[in-house]
Image (cartoon, rainbow, N blue to C red; front, side):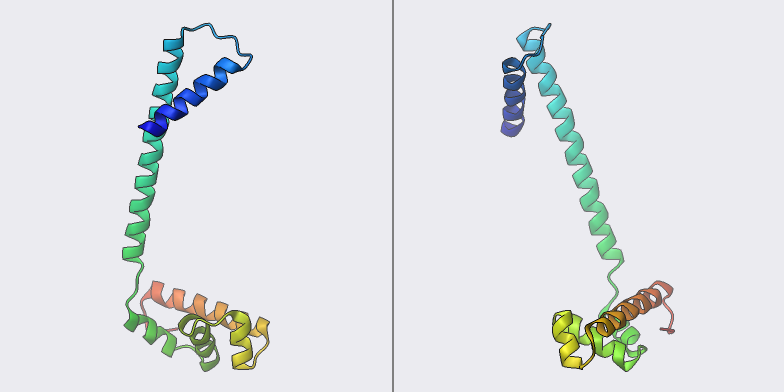
Length: 130
């Protein structure tokens, strides 16, 4: 509430110190700006709440269990699985993983991308084919 009041008073100050012709009383101006600030604040809170609920719902739905991920990774080629393990599990940067695996950086990035695409497709289908 204090933030809204401060916002309203700041807007009033800017209007009164500017070169705006005002044909309304001060109380009308303050109440109008206060109502607009309240409506804007309420709408912002509703949007934030809806966004938070959507994100929470999506996270709950889209979290495959570890067993499914292990099963999917087991179906990938050794090169792709090693690239994913180095970056995701061990936490290496792409550059460090490429050095550790002895492959060019571009090759590592291509393997990571292919692995992620195949795992996403496999998880979306829910089948044993990777």
